[in-house]
Length: 285
Image (cartoon, rainbow, N blue to C red; front, side, top):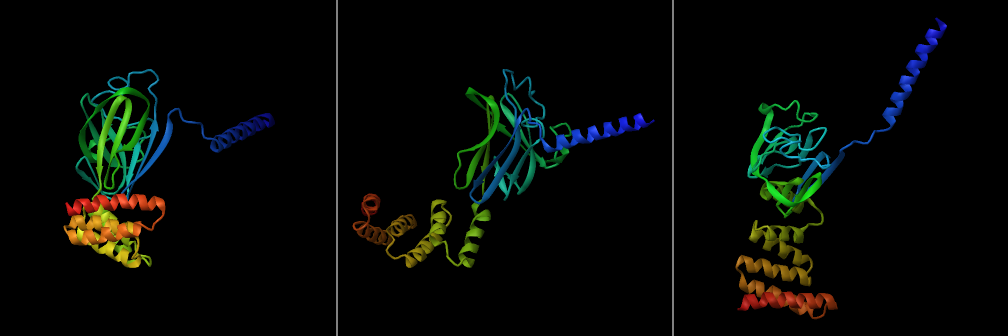
């Protein structure tokens, strides 16, 4: 009996030791986990997924069948997060965390987003839980991508392209941001509340994104009021007034910037003489 008790005690102790060992060391995953983050305008996008390799196999049509729901990676389902509302291939999607599934096809893929349920793979996938579903045309690659990759391309101040790449397939999803809803309110709030007003950056944002040229001109003039001899701001005021249709105002701002450039450092002098000369030639032609 004593030997039996000792044997049981040793077995329990051994099991606890192994569990302790397991909890203190995470066995590396066969398919490496990855997290990619991208900011577009004022929107943060985050993708968490696992990255399987081709390993000499035929992927699409065999390992990943056509016409069936795929977890879009390996192991746990792929997660995607948007900090603001976005548009995916023209389809509106609210901010939040989602699980990303796909249905691969020969010519088109179906993109599916469901609320995050922490699913393992797509085994428990239920179509009635879809938040968004749409099709996108797949593209062919000339060279094979060994490791499944989700990334962002063609990033602008208001959009990006989310791309799924594996084997010789690339599946693009257009992500668009509504600047009027997601950025403009934050800019105006900052202009109202910040001690140091971001007049210049706000003016350039309005100008470069074709949002409100009158507001851009107003903000740039406020920036110049604080920095009357800033040749860079004066040149950009000229650009804004040119777009606004105020030719005389644009010429005045550009000519002042050109005069200031004459006494600037050599690098600034060369740059702004060239820029203002080109602008004035356009305005006076």
